[in-house]
Image 1 (cartoon, helix red, strand yellow):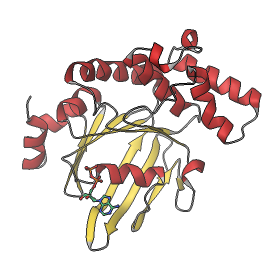
Image 2 (image 1 turned 90 degrees about the vertical axis):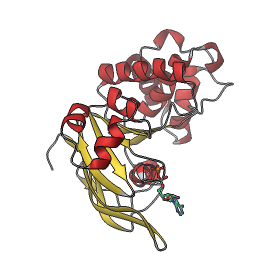
Image 3 (image 1 turned 135 degrees about the vertical axis):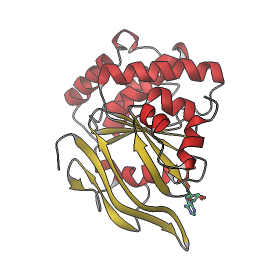
Image 4 (image 1 turned 60 degrees about the horizontal axis):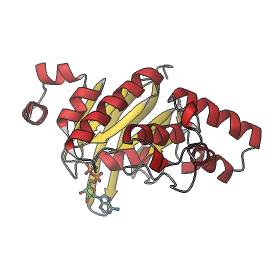
Length: 241
Ligand code: ADP
């Protein structure tokens, strides 16, 4: 596999009983890109992400991460970071403690924990706030902590499932800019699930459009506008724009 491909889905199918929710997915994720999975609710985006994270298993097909099939590798051994919708930071811990916690849980040696926490804080530029608690941070800074906590594992790819979904419109727009900035500073590979076409189109290097378990088209935003390959893509990415 080419070195610039982090993850590859090969003919991946996911069924729940008689219901097939991912219908033969072929998709490559490139190193360093911001890729959005965009589609209406129920189109299979989260299932696609969860199979990579190891929280769901494909019914058939395979998924490669850094050139290796992830089948049989448990979630915590996969080189993946996850950012949740509400960030799920521990309010009683400092920023540094929030980052160290998952590493302690894996019994990593103390000096290694210290250097990883330091590196992650440097990447998201939060070194000076290491001793604060989450409540003493702005929304944007909390987002940085959540990303840093995913980065302490030094993952090949970070998964974000509608991380801004619970926010009001104005804060959401501020956080979109913040996250985009963070991506361009770190060049960490990110896969971002959203049903918001405006969000996907402004933030992403490429957008994968899902409909009813099918990947219809995966292309840079401008190409989706200019050369949609189906009526659904033309309508869906054009909405509210
Ligand atoms: P999206 O993220 O695009 O909203 P999902 O991947 O969450 O879509 O869901 C795709 C479809 O799979 C939906 O119809 C959903 O109801 C169904 N689904 C998801 N998880 C399960 C499950 N554990 N059992 C049965 N059906 C499920």
